[in-house]
Amino acid sequence: MSLTTFQVPAPRTSMLVRRRIATYFVGGVDQIPGLVDALGCLVHDLSLDVRDGVRESTMTCAVLIAEDEVEPLLDRLRGLDAVMSSELV
Image 1 (tube, helix red, strand yellow):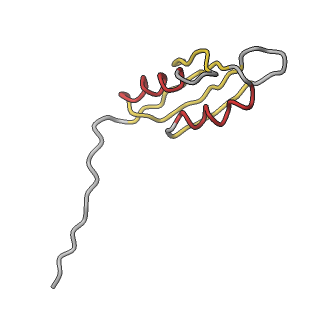
Image 2 (cartoon, one colour):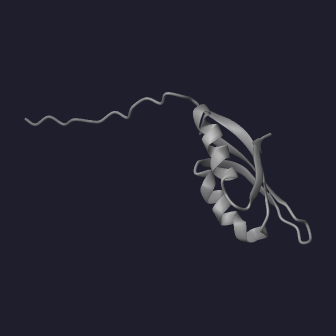
Image 3 (tube, helix red, strand yellow):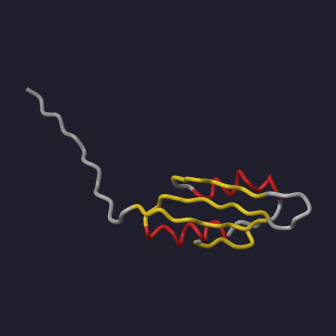
């Protein structure tokens, strides 16, 4: 008779919360892949507003993220060269 062991995942220390984020960026559509990649979490309701002749574009989205990961996410977005600002809305 052999014993089978199962690994139980460690419990999450914080609950996931839904947060809306607005990010203002320059560089147009070429910047979108980098912005989405920087989010690195579950994204809902992604909306982009990119217009010819307007200096800044906008990305708004809702993310499902742990409370203690919100500020690092905003800092990661703000650290991108194209990002003018990123904030909770």
